[in-house]
Image (tube, rainbow over all chains, first blue to last red):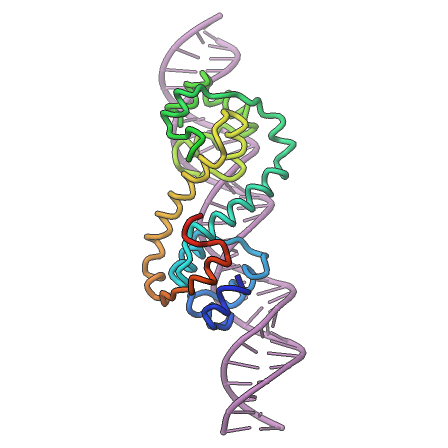
Length: 98
Length: 98
DNA sequence: TCCTCTGTAACGCGCGACGCGACAGCAGGT
DNA sequence: ACCTGCTGTCGCGTCGCGCGTTACAGAGGA
């Protein structure tokens, strides 16, 4: 991101932070990977550089998913793996294709 | 969810909570909409009833997105809406189709 | 009667994102 | 030399929120 959007817009970190109505440090934390991209930030970024908020969030969420999955491995093994019947699943609109 | 997966599995709230290795109250809060579906919970639910974690998370995230968008409306208006050049956007893999 | 389910409420903990202040280093302009 | 603005990083305090814990009260079956 620092390598793409900032030079792409020809902006400094400080200036970008001001435009995003956020502190310098906040932007730094994100650039350094020490903070996650919040729903808030995603919306700010969308308005800020025209890149879909979905893009930023999908990135973030997929990362969290990976991380949490390994953290939760021991707990997950203790959960019985049932299978909800297909008719019910489709009724919820979760037919594996969403 | 209470209307679909619980009766679909023929389980009580208490029993489901036990299976998920979570407190009753935690499940209640989710069923009542007083708590969000965490990445953790999504993974537990996936193992628990076979419904993709993506399904639960997408739901949750879209909701948050809507909510945050209106909350942030005033702030967003103060953010200059720039447009990152397409070549850079595609280089990031955010070509609007992701 | 006792047990298990149900719902709800209040308290406290821990984590994570954020703002604020302060530091030091490095340009550039007066 | 001085001031200004950028850079990165540190620590502290706050706030929101998901979660566990405890405790309440009501409904229904053995």
